[in-house]
Image 1 (cartoon, helix red, strand yellow):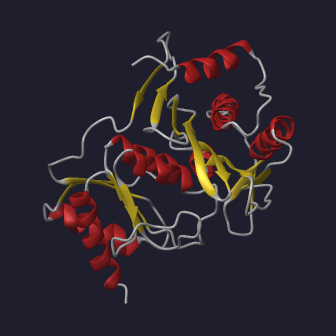
Image 2 (tube, rainbow, N blue to C red):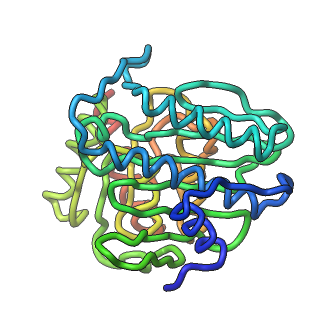
Image 3 (cartoon, rainbow, N blue to C red):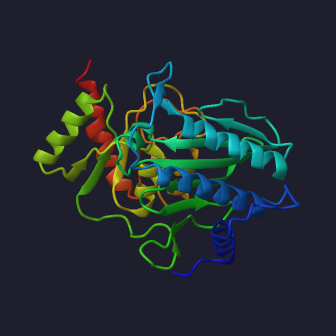
Length: 304
């Protein structure tokens, strides 16, 4: 499908090397353009270094890596935000900050899945989320290696932009890409050092024919949520390290929900994306989510 007018403006501006400008920081469409522009610029920076050798990373207190590139991206977004909407707040995974209870806030993860980026695999992403009065209104997630951008705006269905690679023109379409699967569930299990029992449970379910495939590639949870919104699989993540931050799950969960799916805990209740802690399951199919929840509950009960 063809790009809509907003998508065309964003890509034309990037290709021409022009900065984002808008005189109305109260306009929600302007916030969507700002977010897509910021995410695309970051994705270009990340893509240039996806297969670079010798990128250095420091380990943070939680054991996760951080790179100078991530701090550079956050600094640029913060500077651009200061021009577009100096009244807005920004929080970043690397630079911190606080969201305000009222007004606009921006939450950025410059590389979601830094280990995957450092390992030169393609399952990392850039996320930019906009909140108004702590309610998510815009979420943009880009996969630099795949050349794809998924986003939701204040209203309407989520969209997927496939950038022009190998001399192909860019194209865009609504999500999902396909209806929920009627056959046995395909499962994407996010790897976790504490998820051995979950992994064993799902591979046992596969051996028993309860699910048709189990994959566990790791990388960006945000992009795995986008893949679930496409209709490709049901996603399960133990998510027991810490409560979710504003840059973690919000954009991906909103995209799944606006594509007609849901993201739930193991009891089937929709998760609170700003505060959730614990396992969750995402997918378009209610039956698929129920199957995955049941397998996960049994597997975790065996830990006790």
